Length: 195
Picture 1: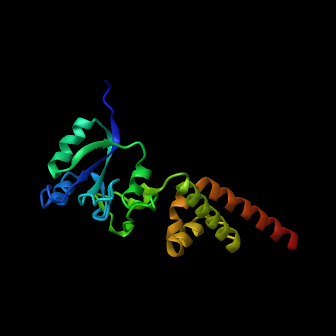
Picture 2 (picture 1 turned 90 degrees about the horizontal axis):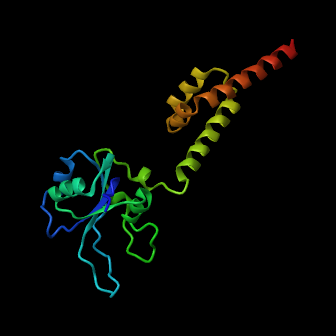
């Protein structure tokens, strides 16, 4: 049987059986991780309350075997080693975002460890692409409205007034440069026609 290596794993932590400093033990591993709010309102199929627990996602930068991950999980008292098929879907499960019939938990209560970003992990089904496209459209509109004809002017404006669009500028610099050059050429033609 082949070992399933993965970069994303989940486990469950029961406060009653985990070390009291389990979060600190996890932080000491210097692994990106997300910890759900305490699931203390979950109900099983029979209608009885489940034992309070946390869902934990471990995010690795390289492939790990379940055995390697289990060794880490045991350090902080997690139960089970679950390779994830979808980081986005399981991240959303931390608060039952896509399960309205289950108890709902606050996204603000998700704990991010070692640089993990809950919002980024939750993105799925093209949400990031749609947001990136909207940012690029907004950036293009700013250039056209202000008739900016130098790249450094765009960079200066974005840094000072629209820092949320900096990523769009950085990742689409060729496109932005083309828009600016086209606008500069048009502006020069209009100036020559007036002479």
